[in-house]
Amino acid sequence: MRGLIVTADDFGVHARVNAAVERAHCEGALTCASLMIGAPAAHDAVKIARRLTGLRVGLHLVLTDGIASLPPWSIPDLVDMHGNFEGTMFANGVRFFFQESVRRQLAIEIRAQFEAFAATGLALDHVNTHKHFHLHPSVLSLILEIGPQFGMRAMRLPREMHASLLFAPWVAWMKTRLDRAGIAHNDWIAGISATGNMDEAALLAILANAPQGVLEIYSHPATEGVAPITPAMHAYRHADELAALCSPRVARAIEASGAMHGGFADIFDHATTPEFAA
Image 1 (cartoon, helix red, strand yellow):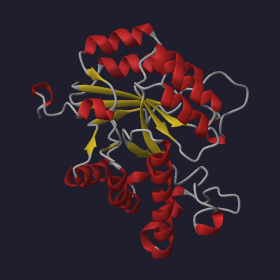
Image 2 (cartoon, one colour):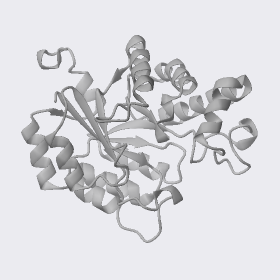
Image 3 (tube, rainbow, N blue to C red):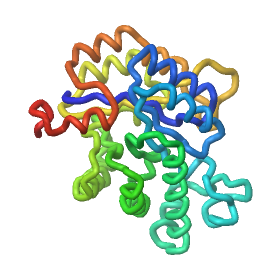
Image 4 (tube, rainbow, N blue to C red):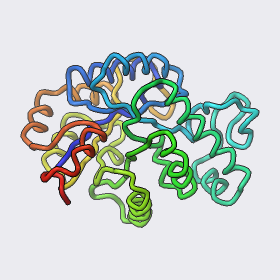
């Protein structure tokens, strides 16, 4: 393993997530956070990120299961009257591909989220999407068209160890697109199949069997609370994930790996040094 990136997704979705990101970075292994720029607690997340100068922050584009950045009247084919993305990912994926008018609205929403992130003044470490929607060809094409205009240099490749062969062609296609565009990316990811259950045992098992290359581990930490942060997260073990990121055993396993541990910018800015040569 040449490099290790440890990321928290959904930064800004709730104050409990923001508090967990701060703690996991200051007391644990967390190096990155993916910011939902239009989420309810995004303003607080940005303030935290400005304080934590070592935390690398990326844009977590929300195009499903969340709130859009633009007003509903400007993207009526994407959201309901309250600005929430509606429809299933499958149905929307079909519309994104076949309906030009929907794609135009998708493009202006993606641009709006990049613009909102740029307005924070934070350095853009990486880009990914909620629910890994950037595997969709239309979504990826728009990100690759718009993102570099805002300094995008790295994206998440959702290539999981021991993943289903069903997604292998899509991931290979995406890797080719990123390489051709000169966008840096991780080689492997961990966190998809165990979403919401990235506890200490899971992290230790991943680190013990880490593949060669650059590995990104992502999770959804949050502090304790009574109600689910979102309906989709009702079964997530947020507190266990936070404890895992702050675990001394995990810290020792990372140190023993010898991998460079940081954000995308930290790792890929060193990609031309001998230890990072292909």
